[in-house]
Image (cartoon, rainbow, N blue to C red; front, side, top):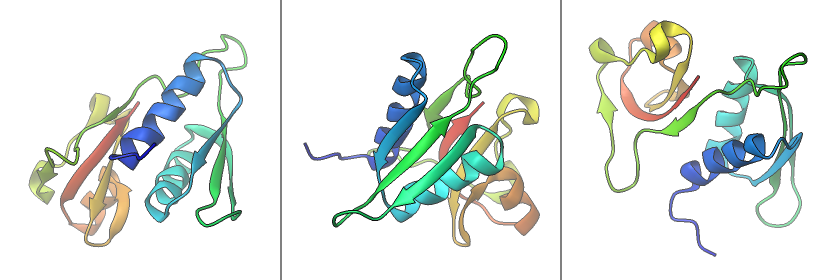
Amino acid sequence: MKVTDPIADFLTRIRNAQKANHRIVEIPSSQMKQRLTEILYENGFIYKYKFEQEGPQGTIKIALKYDPVTKSPAIKGIERVSSPGLRRYTGVDSLPRVMSGLGLAIMSTSKGVMTEKEARRQNVGGEVLCYVY
């Protein structure tokens, strides 16, 4: 099956794995997905990750994070903003704030893939890829 939107596929696999209470999810690898995984890890949304180079593409193994007491997932919501059919761009003066700063918006900028907080620090705008909270 040919995936037309690999980022939406990445987000959907994480969302579905959490709904099924899986501990680990495997996702086909790409540089963009690896950077998204690193951002989720740096911001405490996932427990661990591992990049494996097997075959032409490789895979990303992500250990999902759950609350030890309530068993609820660390990621309450993860949604795609920009899509191949409708790109959503924003300037540095109108960068989004997700849940009043509790969540994060992941953006693709001219300086690489980063959170909206980092984009604000570096004074760049770009394409809003997704919201995580």
